Length: 339
Image (tube, rainbow, N blue to C red; front, side):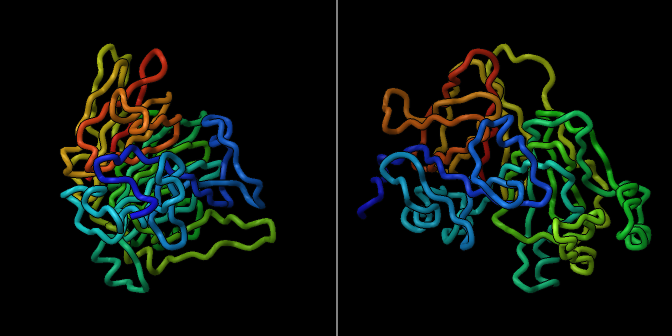
């Protein structure tokens, strides 16, 4: 079909970021990742790097399929793009974001499938993972209930700043990850720049916004009733996955999220070329963290794509074997996501 590559010529696909204004937005997309952002009335708080949603669908920016939407690619290529492990072929199963928090985000929760069915109204389940790319001094992560916190205490204090006393709190460290299962109460603290991998859902129940108002003195809508139905009060497990400490001499792969039905995540620490293979089981998402990399078929420029720190490339399942080539000396970190 015109405008699409042959399956045999599929290449690593890069997409145009979709920037989202947020009242809590920061400046690390510019200061850390050196992005040129559009002029907006409010700060940019999120960059949707890979999205297949009606209200925000990513477009390819490289190669012969530039201009095509992610949804068009899914519809046209099906399993050649998504792989044999994909449950659905009607939309891309994941959403990739960069979260640039200048201020603390709201205290919120996402439903699991059972809660989404109970609540209704088009609610979609969402489990997500955060990878801390950069963190300013005193930046923190609030995620998960403390063991001593009761539902009654949470309900009684939900409108008070003291509600954070019932949450697990962690100092942000670049390289750390957080596995935020559906039902986990959480808030990203100000000063964090985070890579977020999540199910393709935009359902969020905001239970507290810390008393924040916009420039006109208006507060944002809260969803306390739905949020209380979505919170998993039985889960008190720590969501933090500590990052690797120390320099890497050889290429290393560290598993981050493995026992999850929605995605698998690895943290690649590279000092040399890394060979990989989709085996046509699943697409690979590769997110550059601290240095640029070249991804694709070695020696075939038209099937290679360079990505800068913060960018994500989609390796179609049909590509099978490919390599990741670091483009700078020292340790290069890449977050790899598959089904």
